[in-house]
Length: 252
Ligand SMILES: CC(C)(COP(=O)(O)OP(=O)(O)OC[C@H]1O[C@@H](n2cnc3c(N)ncnc32)[C@H](O)[C@@H]1OP(=O)(O)O)[C@@H](O)C(=O)NCCC(=O)NCCS
Image (cartoon, rainbow, N blue to C red; front, side, top):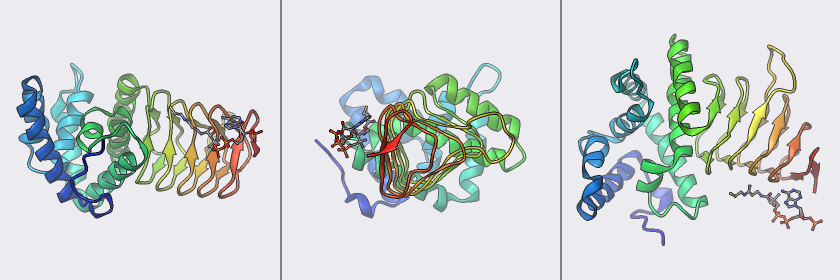
């Protein structure tokens, strides 16, 4: 059963932060095994961005790249635009809570949903890519691929209010664009049709839904609100609001 503490549409970075903290305190009291983890990630954090940076950096760290490398990079991103980044986190969380029946409260996606983590890591990689740190951006991409099985080129442009449900096997290429409020299930490819250095990846417009295992190839457009059926191979643009299915996909 859902346990949201504030109406979804009213959430702000601050109200999300307050509800995460209170849910973390409750979980730490109920199950002591979680207390050290929750203290490190949420209960010692100063704000939503700090908590996100702590959580992601613990996952991204390697023997050569300690958590502080990623935590500092995330802190720099937060400092450049806390309201913008906080607002995107809220929108992503709202989308997950509204569309994934398994997300009973905000704490679960925040702590445990790898699609949510992969998306937040992409925001970091994208920022690094555009701030002169392309090798570090590629390292983040590589770690996300290793950890979550989600491979998103740092240059790909992804909006907010996005859900990667299950997420395993999502691949998004360099020149792909994903507008706001798009839902992905696992195994989705937004790829090129052949080697070509130019703009070669799909453009997914607002509110589209991409079913599990869908392969979308080339610089084509998936129109606003369109649905792509699970298992489809899409090589031609799909109009707004249409549903496409099959291999090759046809409008149904
Ligand atoms: C495409 C989709 C959005 C259509 O849903 P819908 O609008 O409710 O449509 P229906 O289920 O009524 O199906 C409409 C037609 O499309 C066909 N169809 C549905 N899904 C299909 C698919 N993945 N591939 C091929 N045909 C499909 C149905 O058989 C039906 O054909 P018919 O009219 O000849 O009987 C939905 O089937 C789908 O694939 N969603 C993705 C869900 C997903 O990825 N879930 C993963 C959870 S882990």
